[in-house]
Amino acid sequence: MSTRVITRATALLALGALVALMLVGRLPGTGNDGAHRLGNGLGRATNVAAKVKDYTVTSQPLSVSVQRGQSATFALAITPASGFTGDVALTASGLPTGSTATFTPATVNVTTANAVGSTLVVTTSGSTPLGSDGFTVTGTNASTKRTLDLTVVVSTPPPAIAVSITPASISLAPGSTATYAVDVTRVNGYTGAITLTPTGTLPKGVQVALSPTSIPAGMSSGTATLQVSTSASTPDGSTTLGVSASGSGVGSSSSTATLVIDSKLSSKPFSLAGTVVGSLYPGAPARPVDLSVLNPNNQPIKITNLGVTISSVVRGTTVVSGCSAADFAVRQYAGSYPLTVPANSPTTKLTSLGVPTSALPTVTFVNTARSQDACRNVTIQLAYTGSATNQ
Image (cartoon, rainbow, N blue to C red; front, side):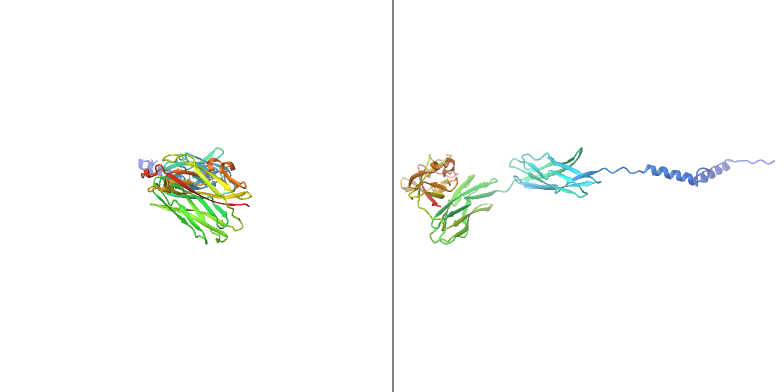
């Protein structure tokens, strides 16, 4: 009887063979059926989560630079994702001080897979701080909120000059005179002197006179008078007149008005008189001109334009040297037209025609940095112009 001896080496070889059979699926219960069960297990582990309906809020651009007092515009887009539909309300928070936000529209309705737009306008003011300032736009649908951070960069606008002319249009008969008021304002800190120049191509027989032709440095604002004289030969028609203002280091600014010559408007004679109510001195308020009309006609007349200018500055009967019309500012009549004056009226004051005192012409002493000692105890002489019809 023979005996088989199992050595350690033999045992190791047997164990290796058993492991190999298990790896290739040869042992009972580990064949194709086992591989199939393993595959099912992996499939259950890789299920995909359901998609969540959502939306985003974007803007083009994200930052806008504006001058103080101007508006910044952002083009917003609300873009749906995963089939989202519904209303999204837009709001802004954390705006720069002194600014406001306006959405157009403030609520967008998303109905398709396409983005829906809204325009955001952020308007700054004189109190809005200079520099870069961020704020947040929020889009809200029920409990879902999506935010977007935007920026406004505010800078100081450059110095400038603003000019306006009133009234915008005057109609009168040939041979009449029209007076326009010119208001000049310094903008954004400009302090220099301002030069005024009349502009426009004049028709036959028309002449213009602008007084004064400059505004001294340092004044916050100023006024001038543009007087337009026509002749009997001036043809009917409409023409554009204007005034240009310029200063050192700033661009020029201009304004225009219309003059209409109509021979069907029969001109009626009348006269004007007035006095300045109150004393004129540096720092004194604007003094009204107590203006009255004399109508010698046998029928009422309708005044369509009034004008007041400073013809001279005198002391006694002598014209003063060193003090002129440029040291005074005239604000023209600020009421409405026409003014109906009764027939054969010797002196009819504007206030008796219902004109408020605040609308009367005024004269102001212009306080400048230069010495104005020459203006002490002077008398200003006024000249009056106007036009009237009985139509």
